[in-house]
Image 1 (cartoon, rainbow, N blue to C red):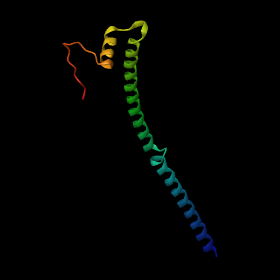
Image 2 (cartoon, rainbow, N blue to C red):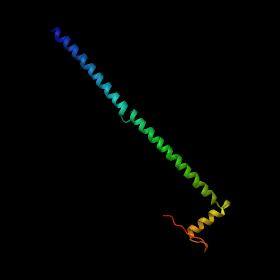
Image 3 (cartoon, helix red, strand yellow):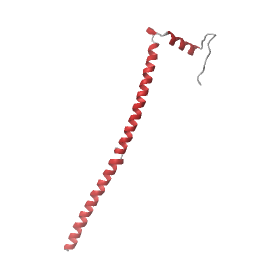
Image 4 (tube, rainbow, N blue to C red):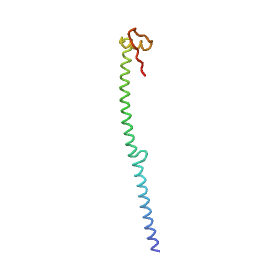
Length: 103
C-alpha cells in the first residue's frame, strides 16, 4: 500500500512536470512564430520600411504636382505652361513644329 502511494505521488509529479514543460513549449513556440511573435514582428518591420519608401515617393510626386498646379493659378500663370497645355489639349501647333507622340 505504501508502494502504491509513493508510485502515485511520483507519477503525479511526473505528469505535472510534463504538463508544465508542454505548456512552456507551446507558449515559447507561439512567442516565436505566432501571429504576434518575433517572426511576424520582423515581417511587419520589413513591410513598414517598404511602405515608408512608397510614402516618400508619393510625397515627392505630390510636391511636383503641387508645383505644376501652382503654376496654373490665375494670379500667376506661367506662359510656357499655358502654351504647352493649350497645344496639348487643343491640338494647335505652328507650321514649323513637329509632334512626337508618346507610346
